Image (cartoon, rainbow, N blue to C red; front, side, top):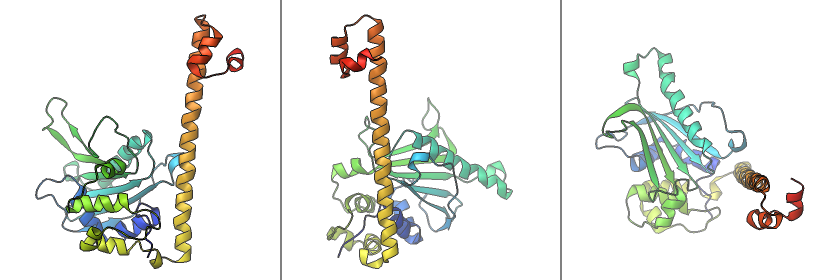
Length: 274
């Protein structure tokens, strides 16, 4: 009985955008809450229209909710990564924070906004940890914090590489997101033994989707594949332009064309044409 990938737009929103008790379980498991900060109840908020990154608008999935204490949570599944995503995440959370003032709330009544970003790529190569928690902190005293905005990024490939096997719900939820692949036939018994993960797993059974929904599911992967190609092409164009700039500078220094060719990988004809 094949399963679908839970990171897809269709499946992610079916699990976490239609079943608040599963979203609550997920957030309480992976968010770095202090004792007593756990979510008791939550309700969904409508998705807001925010400026999209033109090339990557189809690879981001988000779910928004508010808990019983008025705290807002923006949960995003990001299939691809560029540095500009951090700016988008900051904008998105800041907009949600200041929008509370439109309801007649005074500044001291503003409630925190948490941005949780599950990323299907590694982007913090210098850090071993897969979870990154950002706050607005004093540069000389990290215990002094300005409350209001918090950002959490989880790198799924880095988590998967650790091959954690304990039964903690945090680990099981992240394994669920990182291990199940498209049309996988069998899933780990640990998932089936845990009620929340078992329910989420049942929600991604291919047999529970209509033909139209499965076409939408496949179309999402087409979008992601296209955007990966765009990123790769942009990167390669950048490398090529960088080689050309280096070659021009070496020419000005009087370096031989043969040596420039060996240093940059450009042909002698390409260098002569500069």
